[in-house]
Length: 285
Image (cartoon, rainbow, N blue to C red; front, side):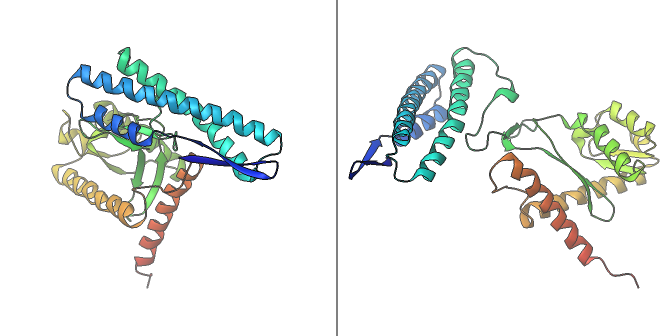
């Protein structure tokens, strides 16, 4: 139940309405666990019906509060204005969610990922799909780590670009930052492709090792089997650094709200990580 305080002459009265929270949660749970297609469609119809009801009540409350503000009947002007701003931000997102549900579920359309809204409170969130694993929501990060274990670069991607498309841009960033491409590189299996191998060689990277070969021969990627195995083990050690970033430096989850705070949160995690690495490094004798 939600209430708004409004001053009327010498009285304070409450405007209340039902929010349908329990019914909507139950309908959403039924949509997830529905087995047959017809049963799932009925659950979605019920869920959309409740959503339309809540949207209608919200719009009515919006006009009532606006009229009360114009007549000077609101008790807390600042809180009322903030509530109105939240409503103005949420309504277009609710309309987008309703539209994408009708298109995807009832019309059978494939809604592009960039048009989907997966979070009302963090609309900048992207859908991240990794092979056949569980779908995740957030942002994809590309990290570059050097032999010193320091994070040399961080790119926060928009959308869900394929890893194979990001190898050359990340190497070009290294060349732009440090004036030359790295002498050797070791990358995750998702970056592996013959085109990336050839482009890496053209950028004067002598050994371009990928965690998965994907039809590539070791002799094509590195000088010898020994060099390839060394780079292979180096890439495996990077996973420990990524795990440390997630567990100890807060990179697994951002508690800050809004896209304008997400980027600084990721960079602050990387900077703190690098500072700890530098502090642990033995001082020159």
